[in-house]
Amino acid sequence: MEQKFIELFKEVLEAEDQDIILTDKFRDFDNWDSLTNLSLIAMIDDEFGVHIQHSDFKNLTTITDLIETIKSKNKSSL
Image 1 (cartoon, helix red, strand yellow):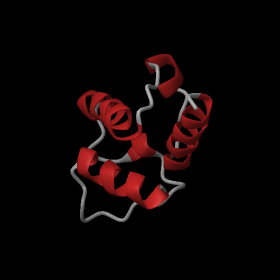
Image 2 (tube, rainbow, N blue to C red; image 1 turned 90 degrees about the vertical axis):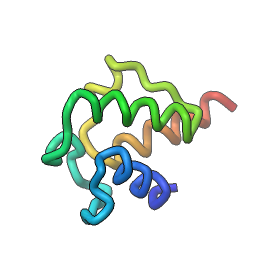
Image 3 (tube, helix red, strand yellow; image 1 turned 30 degrees about the vertical axis):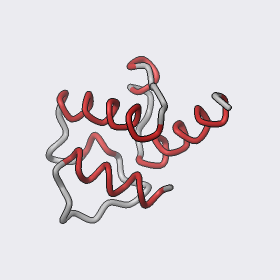
């Protein structure tokens, strides 16, 4: 799941040629802006069926935080 998320994240960030690792702080990327923020939330909802509230999203920092949130919300919806 991690690799799939990173590939989708790269698409949202328009950084397909960039190396992205799980410990990266996603807001530190040069391409990061409010539109990317909204696009990432929408991608997570579309691809993983997980809706992350903006208030929860602002507390996430790394790629791992995003993935762990998706995993935990997927389990709670089963």
